[in-house]
Image: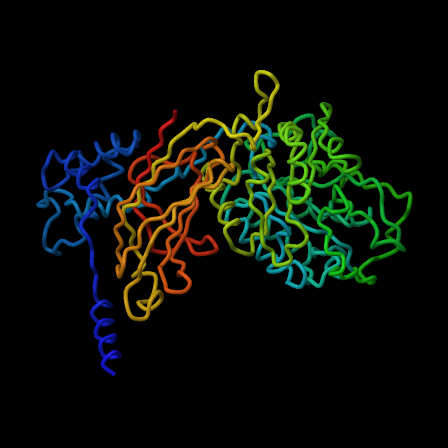
Length: 578
């Protein structure tokens, strides 16, 4: 009984405990430097700090004035004029640093060159974009497509199948128990939401299982819904892909140009028209496959000599390439035309072991799409660097789930203003002086040193209930700081645990030596230390090449990547190029 009473008293004491610690020394030092040792910082001194320390050369007094006044008003009495207040105190200065609108870690605007061919960019790419859950039994819907577009995804995948309903064409993961969604519903939602997040083109990769008659139907529907938004190339084959800038607010079609058509009595043995191999978007776990319902196929549409409708061919901008022959043959570069090749993550891993240079040379002009292996029934994902290191532009992910791999994908595409297109590093686009190409397996000299200092965290008390982390005490937070990139750069570090504190101050610095900073991602995660399994308390992932130096307010997200309302970390980034 005494033990229970003791725990209850301890709980009540700790529960109301704010326990705010002294501001970190670096913050006090910066404040003292720019105030010339005074107790308050004026607007002019704040501007000087923003320009000289934060590197914000374009910041003006006009930018700072509204927030400066607001900070002065917070905490002052209602009848006290802000003109009587000398300036920002140290605490108000730290509040200012935590404003991510001014002091966020990344630039908010597009700043990469967007006039290069599409093959020069990593593209934010979805896989089976219409599925709401797992790959075998979940529902198909336009909702996951809408959500992906709102997040900035630029490549949407649709699997097209014949149907006696749905206007003749349905979108569904074929030969599974997933439920279908009408094609028209998907296309109408794409039209409505395509450019909510970004003006740069949306690419529809089609896994086409249609007859020539239904291909003509698709062309008719697509033109009717998209109208002038639908890009139609002027030639049958391109020698170079157009640029993202030239395709702003356009819908681009990518699929394999039709050549052969399935016979009515052999539907289940045909290679899908939109695939580049028998493995592309068909299940590797053959025992789990449910055959297509025969009533969904209108056999009168199949004619052995029927030609593909010209209207359908004219819609295809990014042509799927051949899959015959050895991997060397599949990766052969054709100077006369550019194309897209799809490989599963397993095929890519195998190819990278013996054809790494061929992969990179292929992706310098052509587009390589990597999709999850068939065993990922639960819609999990692979590590995206597997594709990025070899220049793969379309690393296709299941966006409906969550996990560390998806967080890395979200982190990469926070770059370049979150527009969904990230310019590839020059070493993945150009050959070297002696025609050599980048080898991600070779350990290179250290190119850059990144220093990350973790000062403090705020916001958990606002966003979580008081018993969310611990029933009888405030949380015990610690921060994990990791680099994910090429093998030589991958590192994990963590702060000490701050016991019983909703407002932890760590004041710890970590140094990372980077050989390929252009492909490095900074992964940050906060956890609450527990006796069994540590509790999740927020995460984010940021592209190292885009980090803004200085004091930065970094918002944390939930497991799925949605920003938490109040939770932030105050960090400092320093980058030294050797």
